[in-house]
Amino acid sequence: MGVPIMRSLLICFCFVFISFANLLYAAEQTPEPSHGIAYPVGWQNWGTIAVSHRIDNNTIRVVLGNDVAIKAARNGITNLWPDGAILGKVVWKETKLENWKEAIVPDKLVHAEFMFKDSKKYSQSYGWGWARWVGLEQKPFNLGTQVCTGCHTPVKNRDWVFTEPAIFPK
Amino acid sequence: MGVPIMRSLLICFCFVFISFANLLYAAEQTPEPSHGIAYPVGWQNWGTIAVSHRIDNNTIRVVLGNDVAIKAARNGITNLWPDGAILGKVVWKETKLENWKEAIVPDKLVHAEFMFKDSKKYSQSYGWGWARWVGLEQKPFNLGTQVCTGCHTPVKNRDWVFTEPAIFPK
Image (cartoon, rainbow over all chains, first blue to last red; front, side, top):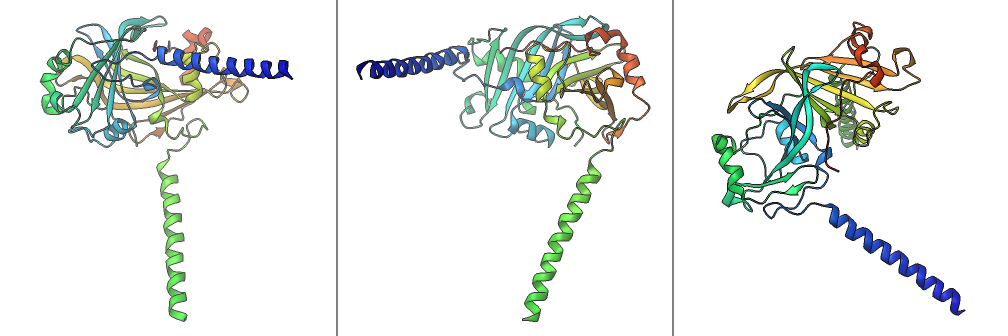
């Protein structure tokens, strides 16, 4: 009886070890917080609010939103945006489409930036949490929220948001 | 007893009538088919595959995908795209962002165009169903698939798709 019990224990131990290793691996895969804000896992599949092409720094962008933000954008509730809304701006360097040179399209990923609306939690930074993860490796940006708010000051009367939601059919 | 029964019947009738009217209204709201293809209800919340700015006709676009297409795009399975994939290209006239003039952003909606991959069903049109709905009212385009395929001929070796999926972090 000793050998089967030992074998069962060994198999059991292996399962526990694999599960634990998987958990560690998953935790390692999620980028570290930016400005104390946790990485918004799954944003890659969020809906679209707008797009833009910045000709001053040769980047092309999509502005995404979580469910709260998408609903608000589609219904014109953008000044103020509701608590719980998260806006994500994904920025790529521009290039030309190989088969249609007159089309400017994404090249390398620059960064993904996020604004997290919570009027109470982030009352010290105009109602938003500001975060950025840089490059494909999504390295957290931690040089201070004032880098973000400084640039967004021209739109302080638009709840600090540059984006005008694109018009979608109902 | 007659009056309560009559009242119940009347209430019941009202419910049936309202439900039926709602159904009719919903059917009326869904745009008619384009090239015999049913309108892909809910595409407004699909994930993003790429963006582009066409400087030859001053439009800015987002390319969206249903779940099958998003999964394929993220995993580089784009030549051939898998059956069941639907690509949606949403096209807006361009304008400048009011608070950042160097940003080209969406103005009026031009149309939403779709490619439906089904290698058997659409074997006569290179494995894709081609459809377009025009303007905010999403009026179906029915001038013939050859209008679409004619323009897409330069990319017949890329499974007829111009779009190169943007690079997203895992």
